Each structure stands twice: as structure tokens, then as C-alpha cells.
Figure 1 (cartoon, rainbow, N blue to C red):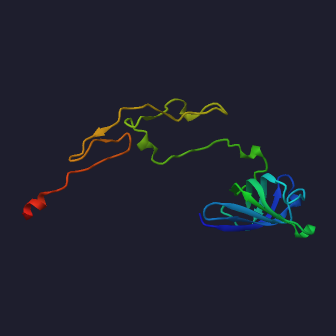
Figure 2 (figure 1 turned 135 degrees about the horizontal axis):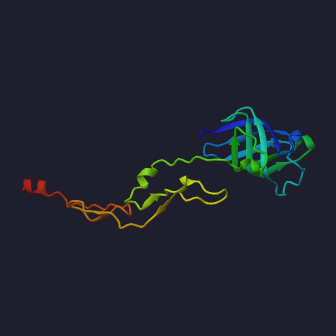
Figure 3 (figure 1 turned 180 degrees about the horizontal axis):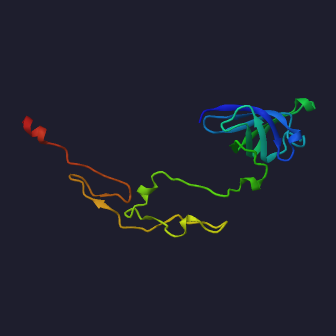
Length: 188
């Protein structure tokens, strides 16, 4: 991921009229921080813990449009002077670009499609992993659905000429062929 910054207006869910200016910074490693001019909600002592489960924003540039939802944010710093000189900075746990998700219900999915690369190689009869064949992977709302199961199998073993026995089940191959002494014999 490339590092970037997005400047814009930020507000607490349900209180867009009290929006404040600020900048979201995203590092190359995915770490995120939000710096705002002014403050969110009540102006409190800088030593008081301040958590915001959802912060909404409209920004100048972002990966998927102008709308941004931040979750799991907590204040990491604050400066106070006169009301117009107040500033706050927040650590941001997650960002959802391209949508305003104002409440917990907005994070509920109606459907999901999951693709796992290389799964067919792992779900081979020798691995012990097998696909679950009934129900198409869909169960009642709120219940866990099994997509496969595992049966412990006898390890696959093979002999490597000039080496020790290897076991594919433990994913280790130990080969120690005997040294080639034919060139030494020729030189004598």
C-alpha cells in the first residue's frame, strides 16, 4: 500500500452540522492517524480518555471516492487554547473508503463471496482436508457454517535415493546424500 493523506471535513455520526476540518494520514504499512482542527464533541481535559466508535468524513482524495468511515478511533493528543486553537489527534483502527456507515447496522452484510487461492491443492484426498458437500455452504442467519473438514491421515512417506526418509505430512524433507567420491578416486 502506498502512503497517502486525505484532507476534508470530519464529524461524529448523527452530527454532520458540527463537522471539523482535518487530515487522515495513512502510512505505507497501513497505520492511520487523524488530525483535526477544533475538537469532536465535548471539549474535555487533554488527559481524559476520548473514544469514538465511528467518525465520518468527506475528503478530497481517497482510494474509492470521497466518503470515508473511520472506526475504533481514540484520541492520542490534544492542544487547547482559545476555542479556535483547539486541535485533536486520533489513532484510527480501520477505514472504509467509498461509503458513509453511520451505525453498527450499516456493517451488516447481506451476502459475501470468499475466494481462497490454492485451496484446491490443499483439499486433496491425501492432505486430509475435504470439502463439505451438503447445503452449498449456506446456513441459517447467525450460525457458523463449515466449509470443509479434516481427517488425520497416515503421513505420505517417500525414499529419496541416497537420502533419509522424508515425511510430506510434516512438510519436512531431510536429504543427506553421500558425498561424491568418484572424482577423488580418479585423481589418485
